[in-house]
Figure 1: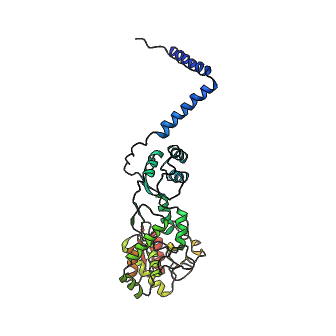
Figure 2: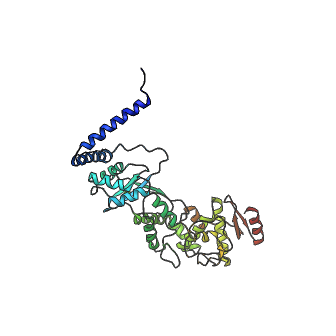
Figure 3: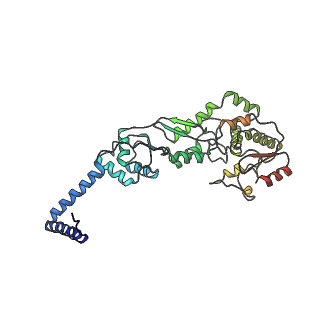
Length: 358
């Protein structure tokens, strides 16, 4: 059979389009409006009102995002958070789906485990049915309060600024207290660990759980050992935070702790780069001489003794290193590019090592 020529096909399509246009023009304005309304409603029905599809199986490696829905939150506020964390593409679409389905007053408070690339109807189905999830998150050793706030915010568990604001004053135990020149009262006492909490959590809950974890892990024996070294718990944690940040490898922790103890006993400045890094918004690979002149109580090049408070939240290994330091005569150390520390007993040898490894 002979196929129609290209020109014949075009003529047929043009004739079909002309016929549709003539029928449309023959309609009155009211009839046209009615047709348009039907088309719009049909599109809205197909796009928004059809039942949500089955939850898609998450592919390996898909990020889990937690959404904390507080009582009284509006769909606009929820949609904004979902869009911010990449769960949905459009907050406006989310709000419209909720509006058209009458879901605005049916969303239940709690924490929900979601993932990027979900459809608004899929998310709303979980929120309306109240399918909350237990929350699991991990905080590594050496994270400071700012790192923790950022990590939790990225996972959708807290508002970063709200968490930081609460951390400034949070001191639930007497040994934490409030100290001059510190930014966050609970810095050092948010124990690095993996936490699994109920669905109804917020910044206050997380701060309480993390400080309680620290308090439980600091045994009576450890408290007694700190007292025997003439260290308060606050001083113990402050020193451990420096060890945590200076030592990448386990074998270095007790040696670095001993160096710090010897310097404190001699009245020498600790000269720990980590205290200068704590003052920066972003870490700097190589600090300069000018950096060591920063005017701050945390500058352990300019001020002898411990800094005003912890610079990070140390793990148990760093705390144990302070309680059980090595027995050495070292006064200096420097890390090479791989993070291994090299030690010396005098400044001349130290300078020679610096030239070799840096």
